Length: 170
View (cartoon, one colour):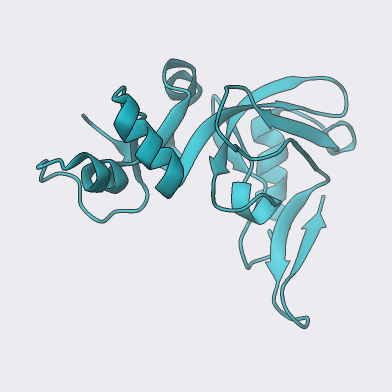
């Protein structure tokens, strides 16, 4: 099965296959001999149909699941959430997928710059004053999937403070 990088998933990919898992995890738990599945943690494949394998993957691995997003003015978007990496914004890494690419709302340990934020608004075709808050939820049934949530801006972890503090900017 051909894989692709999770950051290259499209709306069509998510509509066709609502759950994607790391190909290396499928190879590990599925006893696959496929030489193309290496240790690339960004390479994902659609969730296999084998029920026993799916159970092992859901118990042991991170996946990306299709999600629905609704902005402050009621517009809906399709996107994805990372599952089983943590329940907060840093763990589920909410991402809207548009025709022009993905819009990420979590920037890890680096504050997004004004150019990145402006490009996100352009990709979403939404003015800044009508985007936030954004509500999101996985739109398929998952065992212990990430909880529903709300985005108030573009997030990053500020390591300048004692510990790491989740910050956001609009």
